[in-house]
Length: 479
Image 1 (spheres, rainbow, N blue to C red):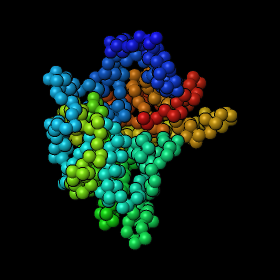
Image 2: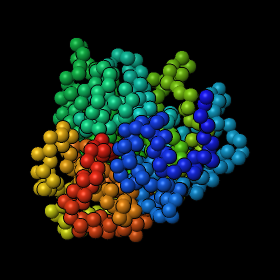
Image 3: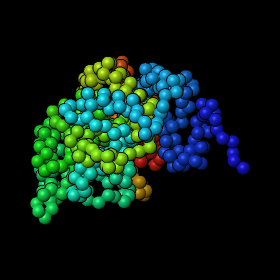
Image 4: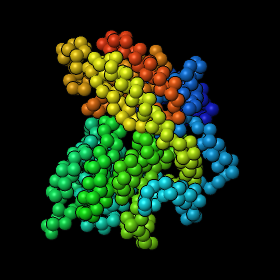
C-alpha cells in the first residue's frame, strides 16, 4: 500500500519537525543531524524577500549568505518573478530540440554583447560542474584528442562530478572518487610553477601535451585572487603553447568582486569562460560556458560534430528568459557600483574590527561582495582542553577554528537573527557574502552584531556551543 502522497499545498504547512523526519527517512539522516545542530536548522521558514527570510513566527532573518552565490538579486526579485509568471501564463514553449528557441538565441546574444572581443558562443546547462565539464570537453575536442593533459591550480574548486572533481584541489572534497586521467596541478598565482608544469608535459617531439589550463582568477573558498601580472603572463604562455585557457567564474561572475567578471579587471581574455550562480536571478538553475569564436568553430563548427555535446535540459525557455531578465536588471541597476560600494563599507568596518578586536580577529580578506573574517583561535583555552579528549574528531588541526566559526554563526542567528555561513577549508573564515542589493544599514547591522558577539568573549561562546553540539558541524561549510 502506497502512503498518502503530499500535494503542493501540503508542502506549505509542513512543520520543521515533520520536514526533519522526512529528511531522516528519505533524504539523508546525517544531513538532518548536521543541519539540525544549528539554530537555523530548527526554524520554520514562511517566505523570503530581498535580503530577508521571514519565519512562521513573524521574525525577520537577515541573510548575508547570498544564497551561496545564487542570490545577487536577493530573494524573489519582483521583476524576475513577473518574467517567469508571464512566460507561464502565455504558455510559451519550454523545450523542443529541433525547433529554434528565441530565448536561448537572445540570451546568447546578450552575453556576447557584454563580454570582450570574440567570447561569443554560449552553451547553457544546469550546474557549474556541468559548465566546467563542457569546457573541458570543448578544449579536448579543439585539439582532436591529440593532447592528453589538463592543468589546474593547487587551490581550486570546480565541482563535484567525476570530471570536475578530478581538477578540484579543495580539502572540502576529501574523498577521492575515480578521476579522469592526465591531470596535474600548479601553484596558485605562481607563474614559474605553471612554466615548470608545461615544460614537464611535452611529447617526444617537444610539443605541448596540455590541451587546457583551468583557473579561478578569484578563488572563492580562500578569498585569494591572482595578480594582474600573473594572469597576463598566463595568457601569453597559453597562447604560445596552444593551450586553451579556461577561467572558472561560476561563483564570482556577474559583479560579485566588482567588475562584471573578475578577469575583466585585469585586461586579459580567456578562451573559455564558465559562469552560473546569479546568472539565474535566484530562480533559474542555469549555467554556461562561453567560448571564443575560433575555439567553438574548430571543435564543433560542422554538422558532424555539432551534436557531440548536448543535453536534454540545454537552455530551457523559462530558464533562459529568467537569465535575460536577471542580466538586464544587473545592467540597469548598476550592480558594479553596488558591488564596489559594498566593498568600501566592508573594508571600513573590517578595519575597525581589527583595531577593536585584534586578539580575536586575525584577518579580513575579500573583494566586492565576497569577504571572509578569520579568527585567532590558537590561544583559546578550549584548544588546550581538546588535546586531552580521546576522540579522533578533535585531532583535526582545523577543528578549533571550525568550532569557533560554527559557534559564532550559531550565536549570531540565535541572538541577532542573522544567517551567516563559514568555510570548511585550510583557512576557516566566517563569510560575509551578501546579495548585491543589500543596503548600508543592513551591512552595518551585521558588523554591529558581530562586534557585540565578540564582546561576549570568543571563549565563552565557543564553550557554550561545544557543550551542546560537539561533533555535528565538522563537515558543515562551503556548500
